[in-house]
Length: 376
Image (cartoon, rainbow, N blue to C red; front, side):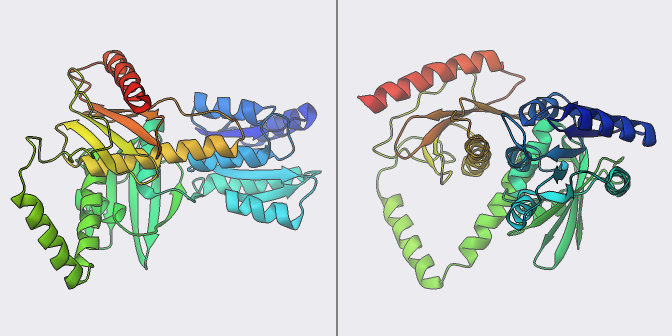
């Protein structure tokens, strides 16, 4: 059933709206919150399809709640309400993803009709200020069921998620895995989310992590193909000089360490470990064996930056201590490390061979080691 969250610090208004919607739309589950902070708790506790929020509230206001939604759960359709709908506020609300702002005192039948229309259409939302790869990771971690309509340079495709798993993909001239890889590699896509329905097509067979890395590989190849011939010749000459020099005995799939970056020690039962620049996603130091480590580092950096942006936008004056990205075959633990430029440690392991508790202990030791080396 579709779940609707109503957020308002006016208890009377909150009860009235909840009661009317519950009576007139018995197919909807109505959840309530007295402010933005409570709303975040509700959103994190159980799936929500649509949010109707007031703007002026204590602790976390409506603008801050929309900012949180845009980074953490951009697939949730958002509507707002206020007694003071000035032009600047309305423009800001549109930028944050509010589909419509209702003026208080509310015309309750009109509001109910508009929300019912959104529910009937499948609860549509639009993703802003986040890459498709990062958004897919968020949907996976949140175990959401939805369909993404992706548009880029006149092309239109769709990606179908079922409880966080990518199960279907349609591109203009491809289906399944090939379509998913093509769509993920499209530049500057516009993303529209439709609500949860039973997936019509189940033709994607590969894990999301593989599809993301394959799409990034194709994107990198396309960028290299676009480099002018003179630059390619210079790059080839530089690579030839490097090959002529003695090479360290390291895994060829893991980048060499930079001279100013402390070496990383390989934890027990982990597949790979890396120190990555937060802003660029560039691997600075690494150990172990992991295919397409640079691509995975880019995804991890993007997710970490999105989490940091949300904390900053909410004015929480806090920091990210750890993120864990999971797929059936690969778990990635991310820990920021004090450094200049800002970096994070990324530990990758197979959940069938190691446990999160054990690898977290290894990560604790590693971060302390890096902090000690960095301050020495």
